[in-house]
Image 1 (spheres, rainbow, N blue to C red):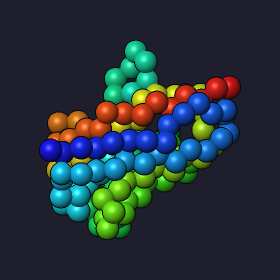
Image 2: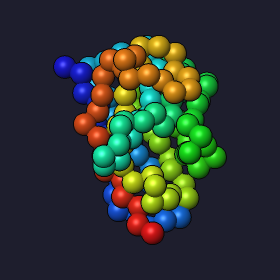
Image 3: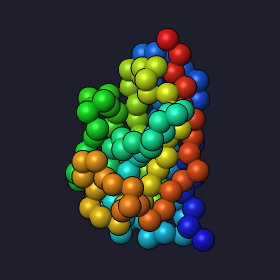
Length: 125
């Protein structure tokens, strides 16, 4: 059974940092590019960042570039998202996702084979 389980979300103030984690099981982690998406209330799910299978290449959506860092540990089957200088507009449910493609900018959701259940990030002003 494939499981992607996010953790690390919470309520923070603008300018704070958070680190999200995604623990995976039941999937050959190293055979997937991995992504983070987010969905704010009343909005569509949007791409945030992706990382290729080896962890050598990373890609970011413009709103989070220079503030967020995606990384992975293939030995531990873990995905991370380090978020700095958080803004109220970053408030959303954050999802980790397994991409059967190669990662890249604006990974489309139809390429996602597996989703986590999401973790809430709330940034107050």
